Amino acid sequence: MTLRLFCYKNLLLFFLPIVLLAQVHKKDLKQLPYDDLKKFFWDNERNPKKQLEYANAYLIKAKSENNPVQKARGCFLLSLLAENEKALHYLDSAIVYTKNLNDVKFPAYAYSGKGYVYKKQFKYKEAIDNFLIAESLAKKNNPDFYYDVKFSIAVLRSEELGEVQEALDLYRECFNYYKDKAVRTPQYSYSFQLVIFALADAHKALQQSDSATYYNKLGYQESKMTKDYRSNALFTLNEGANLVLKKNFYAALDSIKKAFPKMIFYKDQGNILASYYYTAKAYDGLGYKDKAVKNFIKVDSIHNITKRITPEFTSGYPYLISYFKNKGDAASQLKYITKYMYIDSVLQINYKELTKKLQKEYDTPNLIIEKESLIKSLKEDKIQSYWGIGTLLLLFIPIGMFGFHQYKLKKQYRARFDFIMNQAIVTNDDRIPVTETKKIKPNPSKIEDIGIAEDLVNQILVKLTHFETQKAFLQPNLTIQMLSETFDTNSKYVSKIVNAYKEKTFIQYHCCPIKKKPN
Image (tube, rainbow, N blue to C red; front, side, top):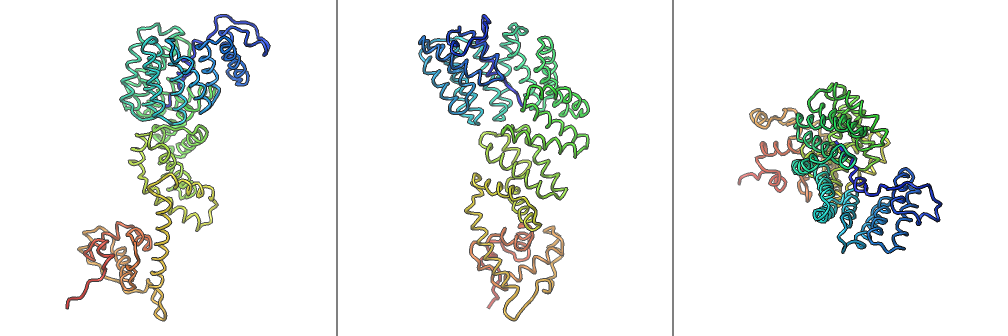
């Protein structure tokens, strides 16, 4: 379950105003107290243009008074409205203003803010580095924020790096800290419920469904007592996902449907994706494959918007690939192979568990072979999928192990080999169709040993005979894969038949396929 963290906003509770004043004209904003500027900033959360006015006024006021802590807070506010490098620039300025101060919030808040910016950019090493600095600073004089940062590190390790067990230990530390606080007061209720959710989610990820249910129920009761309807819906959704793992599919669908309207209301894209994903898993468990596919496709549509997906939600892609393959829908099959491989190429360094899933569930080399076959098929059938094919070709650039240069060489060698083989079939006045070549009687004992059908063995032996007769083995850099493709068969079959009937490895056979007659 994607944690829709509000930790970043949780850092900003100190921005709540003490006194609410009437709206002031823009030119007089800097005359307002800092607390009022902060209040107006958050009152206009759905109006970034207004927020920018108040944040700028805050920083101008702080600079005019040469107040380093307030300058840092002004920069921090502006960083919330910026993206990427601009946001980092504001946060770096906040660090410079307060680096030599012993303030309880700065520069620790700025370092934590940088951690979130880097996390959003998928730069997880940089994110961890900044979170650790923030944690170290907070440990000295701000225990509440110290555990906020510890929690952020745990979430990054769990969701982004797949290190769930390691994160679980950190979640427990946070839980033990908060449980002794006034957890139903505004100061601690949100943080406490967030940690409970994380514990439930981690246990679910580790297939410890009973423990997940325990924390989901605890969180549900706590959020109900504090009237936090958003958190309440999250616990309902998470238990729905947990019920899928318990194979209680009807109850799972009921819980997910109850929570889903809140996810829509709060525009929570991460948990909208989670809702579709576990709805698909529930329908699959009930045998409604078409409904499962419909929801897995919605998962993909959310990923197209957010550009973010965690290892938990990737198994929908092999499902879609298999489904459309069975349906004979080559265009859709190619589309989801492309997307699945894109996720692998972009995230495999950071998403350790995702890489394991890819290797286990759909081996990457097999995907490459299947893609090439699908492209050829689509071209022959004149299916209009040029956009998908173009995207596919572009994806080969970041996949070094299957580099474009090697692909071109392979095509060149294949073309040369095809030319030689075509010459072998039709030469001058001697035209001998392959289909008319005398059948070679395979040895029954060898057929049983290699486990390949007699007709297939005979076909491959006939083609190997032409290969030898026309001296196609002289083609340099010939591989068993190239030969197998020319024969329209599997490389494993060719290898087994060469081993059994020619009594050689393929490399030996390539060098000298025909045994010399004894003198």
